Image 1 (cartoon, rainbow, N blue to C red):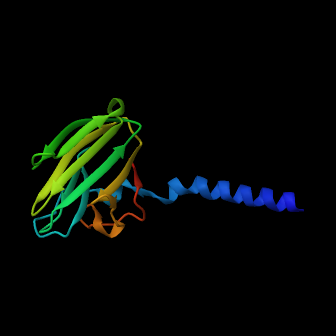
Image 2: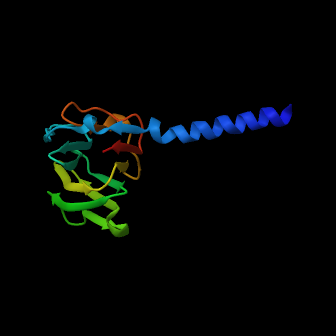
Length: 157
């Protein structure tokens, strides 16, 4: 009886763990639209998808902030261009093009990156603000500013 109960608990735990990627996935439609963040937007990450490409902006009005992000895909990051970066800000492609690592020191303005993902079916995002995972309430997707349920999270392409 104990072995059967233990086996059932293990099976339930495995099933729950298998569901985690599904639960943290967001549809690409959540980010669809052209960028509409402004200098008066609140501190956070702004994520947009339009015309086969992505824009990720960071904004930290007033106080200086360090934004660090790791984006991963099974595809390849391409056509990466940076926007409004200052000295020390970086956007590096690693792991044969499967990883894009960002570091933006943002204050009083908007920093960003524009890119395309080729041959990928998912985009995994791990977003930090000042060395801690940023709350999902400070991640804004698309022109409606939808928040993901989790951070890190995945966009299904």
